[in-house]
Image (tube, rainbow, N blue to C red; front, side):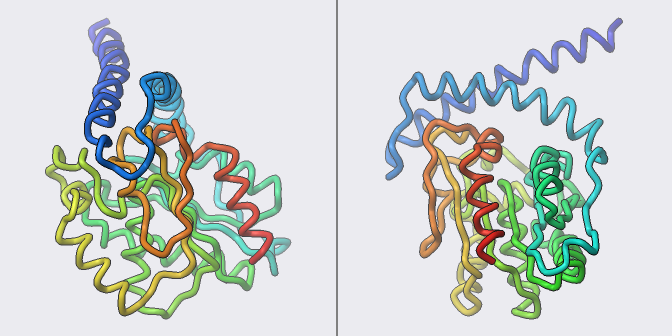
Length: 269
């Protein structure tokens, strides 16, 4: 009984924490170049993110992360595949909807698990590299990298470490704190500290990319992102930065226009 009560309290508190995050967004984003969200947009984003919270963190990731296995089939030869990279405190179950969609379209894919959960972002390069090698071996083509949140930074860290020895068709980042995020000031974990606004790690990463430019990259961002804000921190100079109004952090990854754009990149590569 006590366990049930405790679980109920945790599940009840989480939406309140989300609400506090949206209050922070309202105040912190005032000076950002992106359009400031309206109170109605923030309310709708909170309701949507609460639903995604229960679906993603209380169901898919703890219980369904093995539900859709990686797909590497001989029939995928000659067709660009995908490597899916999740974000902070997530696992491959985050991408279940995406994986089913890719499977229905006969696209090879590998969804990584980034471990250790609280390690340095640099620690994740090996898992990403292995996935890229596997997809490329199956298809004969460099894959498309699709990354959510911290996963986009992990992909950039991989690019720095591979030093041009691997190729990707393109990178897509969704709600990635390329310039850090205000919310990371509360984290004491190595990867959390790396995601702080104007962190030394992010500064060095950008400097290194001036010598080894990133492949073509699309950055999706929103003015209602409750994890990565101010909003423009999810953009990069020279990238194809695409703004989606009124969408929260997890919800942004499941917007039809985001996935349709990625499918378009696959068709063109």
